[in-house]
Image (cartoon, rainbow, N blue to C red; front, side, top):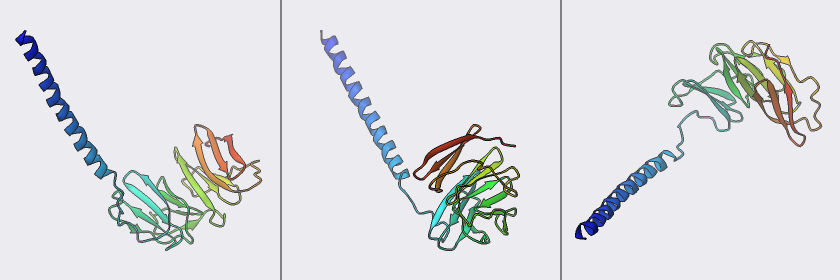
Amino acid sequence: MNYFWSGIKLTYEYMKTYSLVILNLFLNLYLLNAQAWQWQNTNGPPGKYFWCVNKQGNELLASDWGGEYCVYRSEDNGLNWIKCTNPPWAAMDVKRCGHNIIAGDYVSSDSGYSWQTVLSTNNSIKRIIIDKGIAYSVTQFNSKVYQSNDSGLNWQDVTYNLNLANWNIGDMIKVDSSLFVAEWADGIYCRKITDT
């Protein structure tokens, strides 16, 4: 009988000790992760009104759309930033496509040191998406959708019969072979699209 009760006591002490170890481990992991969850200023680009930030590999691209009106590039995951030569106007979205940087109506083939105008949308490119080396862009105010098969150098209008009452597209995504656009008060529209 004493052996039975001592076994229960041993099991209780064993469970209590390991429960405390597990609780201590959980609290330590939680506190470490809580510190990692804190937001920190990157001391990044000196601009004020950043509209977008995008990543490809170790490169980050950011667009200041109301302060300095320029594009910044980081090659080390945001530790240091390079101010690109300003495109002629700011961009609401900036993406890398192949060797080119697409920033709104403009494209740079030399990592942002010079820019050429490739679209005439009055700087209203709201979103750029890159899928399998093909770029798609959508304008915010005149409901146009464009596609480029050569990394942003040439664009074709693929809007076709998208007649929207409010002409204000807010966003766009590509899913498989379909483009979806979200229009301010008119809903979500979808159409099949070919990549070539």
